[in-house]
Amino acid sequence: MLTSEGYKMFRGTGEIHNTQTGALVETQHGDWLYKPEYDCWYVNGSSYPAECVKVVEDETKEVRTRHGRWERVGNYDKWICSRCKSENLYAYAYGDDDYELQDLFCPHCGANMDGSDKNA
Ligand SMILES: [Zn+2]
Image 1 (tube, helix red, strand yellow):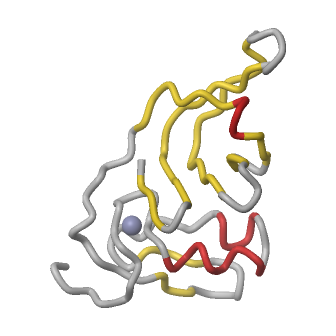
Image 2 (cartoon, protein in one colour):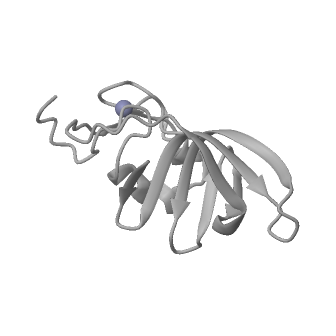
């Protein structure tokens, strides 16, 4: 689990539960992002209120000494990490409003995306 300024992010598996019955509704695997301003988790193009989500497996590598930057490739809607070359799905999945997320960290390799490239 990576955190920055109230945002949380992890790659892994989460369960979505019915908050009234406690029943398991569905399981999602992917890159999870929590936005404090909405108190919601976002994954695979869906959003869920935080109270419904239970993290069951967090595969995130918490290596925060890495540094990198998002590099725009090809057209305007694809960004990749300068370290691990993983694509930033949020850059186009949620539109321009979420471009600030690129400033935080890479969910794939855990790099701080401050563009410094130090400790690379
Ligand atoms: Zn990366």
